[in-house]
Image 1 (cartoon, rainbow, N blue to C red):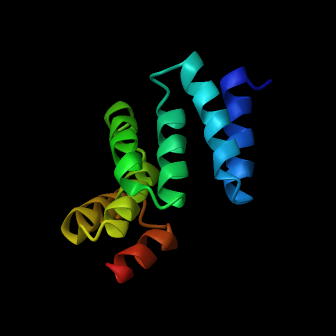
Image 2 (cartoon, rainbow, N blue to C red):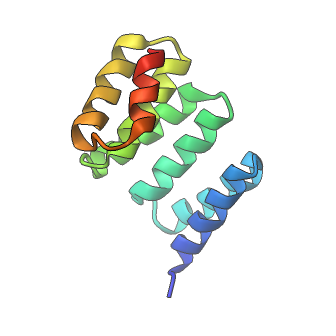
Amino acid sequence: MLQENDKHLARAEVLIQQGRLRDAEKEVRQALHADPQSHKALAALGRVYIDGKRPAEGIPLISQAIGLCPDEDYYLYLRAFGYYQLNLHTAAEQDVMQAIALNPWNAGYFALHAFI
């Protein structure tokens, strides 16, 4: 059975996919209210901001998530994408290369690297 935070994050993921970022942000904030140190919730809120073209707000949240879970390749990819949006190509390349090193089977990481 899913815990309450997991339910909020699952709903947020669906809302993000639907482009309903404000609603997704509300769900993620509820999860963060219950557990402010949830790396999943921090990364999800960072993704909401990055998808909403607000990378400067998303990057610090994703950095917190990376601090809590440094071996999560997807978080490095998210932060790399945020850096890419800000035209910080050196930082973006460092993060995406680290994500690739952790998970060389994700083609999306190579696609981002090609854009950088």
